[in-house]
Length: 285
Image (cartoon, rainbow, N blue to C red; front, side):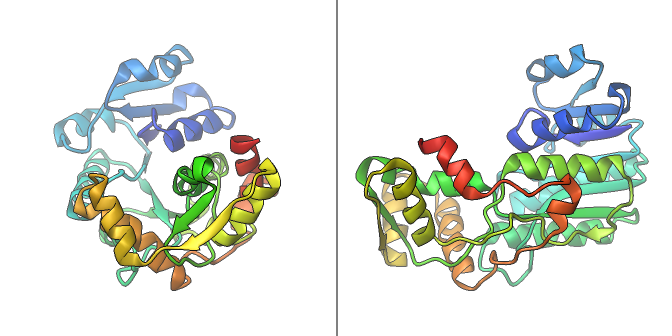
């Protein structure tokens, strides 16, 4: 049985949907914190179990009978994230899974300027030493992140952000389809995958031009000093780790950590990945 965690979240839910087109429902299970949110899956024959990365006992039950477990990374930074991932990996190994898969990041590195990528690298090391075969899905930077950063500009017309660099913004839907393809073809990748990315890398200056073209409204890209951006986020009430995490996106982008492009995603899904322009057009038009 293939168990997918976080199956009521954006990436996990779409992964299960694609997986159900590839394997019978009775071979698919989900581990979720709130089973009521997965009742639609249960109605289609998917095994729904309650499981939390903060409760190892719940995962022992959630992962029972699994041959593969896909661990969808948590939306946390630092040791909290790594510890939750460790708990899930150890539970999958104890449950007898013969392969553990994990949604990592194209920029995963202990030397990354972005805390989340350092967390992904630490999690990949836990996987490497877990004693079972593993696959780390090196996902491109989620295109939804670009939309979040652009949000304030929709009213002001000012894309006021720190200096950045090119990023391979990649759609959740494409990454979910790729994850399903890898799960359905067990062992297709052993260890880290190539970067699973859209075919183009774009800066926020590029995004500003796209937004202007799509909406017909003038958008302007202005560069905000890092310290001013940090103060703005802190004054908005964001916790310090989140502030540094968001700033780290720009520091890492300037260093070229998210600029890579690779054909692996195209090969996995059998078509050209959705480009950010299409994502923006759907959101803004």
